[in-house]
Amino acid sequence: MIKRALVSVSDKTGILDFCRELAAAGIEIVSTGGTAELLQQNDVPVRNVTDLTGFPECLDGRVKTLHPFVHGGILAKRDDPSHQETVESLGLPLIDLVVINLYPFKATIQKPDVSFAECIENIDIGGPAMLRSAAKNHADVTVLIDPEDYADVLEQIQACGETDIETRFRLARKVFEHTAAYDAIIADYLRNVSGDDVWPDQLTLTYEKDTELRYGENPHQKAVRYNKALPAKGTMAQAMQLSGKELSYNNIADTDAAIQLLKEFSEPACVAVKHANPCGVAIGENIAEAYNRAYEADPVSIFGGIVAVNREIDAEVAAAMKQIFLEVIIAPGYTDEALTLLMEKKNLRLLRLSDIDTPVAAGTPLFKDISGGLLVQDADTQLWNDLDFQRVTEKIATAEQFADFEFAMKVVKHVRSNAIVLVRDGQTVGIGPGQPNRITSTEIAINNAGNKCEGAVLASDAFFPFSDCVQAAAKAGIAAIIQPGGSIRDQESIDAANELEISMYFTGMRHFRH
Image (tube, rainbow, N blue to C red):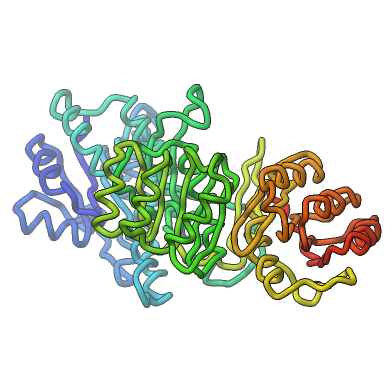
């Protein structure tokens, strides 16, 4: 039976009503600090924890519940004779219900201009200790961290004076998940403050559940969406859905891929993505021009795809987008007229991400799940190293081709390897993604481009192992090539480019994307 509850909460949601009902059920309430004061002010019977322990709070409140009378009363096994003998001999007051949520460390570190000292002071010590004690002894003790669970526990107490073991086990598991996440945020904060770029021997990540998805990549797979506990500006997790159907697993993954590529550009840009690969990318004087050029880059593949832009969508752009079937549109904003037009397509998912152009910071970690483990690497935020960049052919690229080199390398970084991208005048004209050999990727890109190959530049994410890609490019009318170089057979490709009068440049920097 529950006879005594210890209550100490930062989140006061629902706590007054809950404690009133506990008191009405004859349960003694022990509390601390602000919670005790709140209960007293509202005429809820409460006993201060210092009366229970016989020891005053000290060190500015840092020590108040770290006491044997608190932890002994929580941890004592009710069915263990030796424990009960100790309880009797020491006069330990048994605590049957623990209701605690922790100092708001996460909210504190997100405050602007918050000091390091204030952050440290908001690391809860006594709270996690009591939660872990209660969760460990869930065979006898009920533990609550979430106001959402108050009603269920109260209903059981009112029905039979205690909770069932299934509920106590569920709540205990919830506690350990919560305290693990709490500590992970603290560790992450301290790692960021230190500026240490050495990855720890033990890496603990924490994410918060956002949505249970209808299914995963395929209908027979279950899926859930989680977001990082500490939100980052300009990320998919921060996007707000304005209308349309629920986002699917594939919608989310593909939209994120579009966002990451879009961040490469500061000028008005449009990125179309299909099955995680870009299918049309273009820049323009404005978003209307960028969208039209991205559409023209591959009007077949964009059908049923994802479109991301880095400027507000107006009625002109919305009218153009409305003409075809798209799964998702994401932009930093929409005019009222644009929203009205696009919302007429009930299934079209419209997302707003105001900070969509926030660049990816150097050193941002990327995670890749593998069976039994995790791979971690820095985000690929570079195009090339100027010291390694070199012309390797007799023919020199024009200024326009250099501009397309930069554009093409920004895109090729985001295409699955082996990756070939053809670009002309700030517009992709052909993309060859994810083939087991580079010549097949080259042929796919050339076939997609057709007569748009004439005068285009070709970018490759890795070196050419043979000269066949150079020969195929020349035959298609491609004017210039940019690639990392580094093959033991580089000279064959250089000789072929010279013979075929194509300019070729080596960047010295590979951009695999698996």
